[in-house]
Length: 441
Image (cartoon, rainbow, N blue to C red; front, side):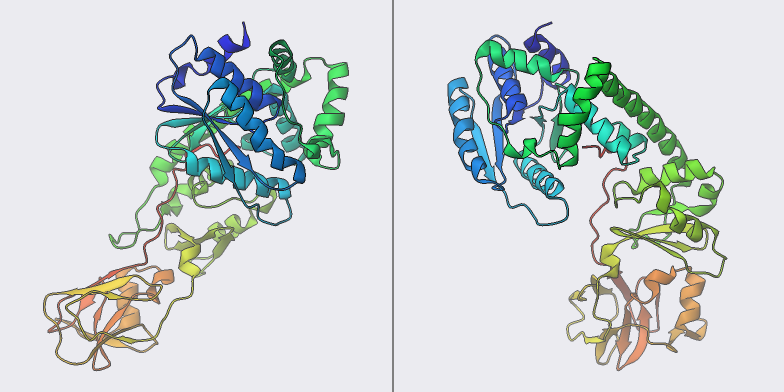
């Protein structure tokens, strides 16, 4: 089968996309991909094809690459967009460049469009080896996904079962020219070391090493899919609600989790938390067991990269980093109670119904406050919050309506005589990503 035919077969599910955008570095792989698609478009009805070149500005040689890319695109009649990015400094320049690159791709990708990436079979084999040596689990060893959601569209890799030798043969047959990234010659970089020194040695003993390693990635991807299906089933049983329509916080039933084996607990949590935070590797899950097994009166916290897990009664709550942001806990005047009042870092409040007569302000519990509850007399606020089942992590943030300095309402829960309904909408938290999204590279 020709490369063109193989490409069209792999891209058959994406023929109805609104556009195909090729990630075009100017190197061998993306040059062959773009050229083959442009040739195929002359005899097949394909979505509009264009190219995106991301210029990182990390080395002087790269300054000439956009011009090279433009020349080839002009020859092929393919529109080219060049995106200049700033690469953040950090421990891993390679990872920072990748993050900048994908941010640029995401910004350019419109709804229904497909970004075509040129990684091939040898790249997949290299990724499997690299992640194996880093102690990756099933998700990591599944390596690069053949397709995955990206921004408003999808990222697709149609060359994952094509060896580099086939791309080289295609480029030679068509007399293609491409740029070489000087950093690819640096064997001090882990991936380059595998590519330049380890994989060639493996091929001398096992000529089909890349093919076999790529097949391993397929097996792991299938195993990952099965684990995700199991997690979905477990999540249906464990999904819970905080019990307050104004508190939009992801929640699980801890009792349902405890009914699962340790391995299934971790599998469910990996799946559920995938849209919220990056998870630690298998050696650093003691925080979960400490939280799960703590006594009923304890207040355990498992802190993760982008937030934390907390426990309240039989429920498990995910709190993202926004809940840890400092907020103004001092009372602030509310001279116009007919209008909503913004609370810095803590959402907003508003009143429906009767407005108490007096000087109004909004404050927070300091300790010892009481509230006049119709039919129950004066009651301690701490006891009222406990009776209502409000989780500890939210109690300090719930606003109090004060009239002449005296509490007359507890937001969303209780109001005293002569006071209407006191509403509070916490700071809007971005909705979580779908936990089922495959976050592989």
